[in-house]
Length: 227
Image (cartoon, rainbow, N blue to C red; front, side, top):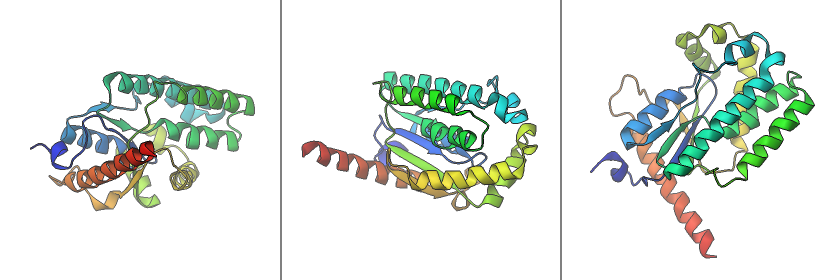
């Protein structure tokens, strides 16, 4: 019996890993995909033509960056739809609109016109049949000090040179966002409770929780459809 069968995780499940920058989304995404033999939907950071420019000048490049991310994530959503599920996503499309774009609009680094254009495009995408909602959102959380330490350990110069106030605001916005998120069930996992890099088998307690949440969610959906 493989791990997916052991923890009763359907082979068409869509699981999204969310959390602030540096929290370990990519590591968790890879670990879950390997354990469940699922495909991955990864955030394309290295090939992003706007990311470095954005960190140098938020106001000049925030709209370009968010449109780029939105287009890339929508292409990933379409791919998931065409494959019929069985995916682990590294960051959700909901975070782009609910946290990043909103933060730049609130702070004046994205104009009202640009923000409304972005929001209208996002809303149109969500209404298409190519937009499968996740079965579960895994939210990775930790203390602010832990997050900053991980950002510096990762060693990306553009992130290390970013003012600490930017990370503080993003951390707070993520907490507010997840407390109001309702597009799918949420499994909150503290990063101090596991060590995927050093402890073999530490993914299994996560899988057990994932299986429980997805089974519970699908039973609820079935009851709702029968009403």
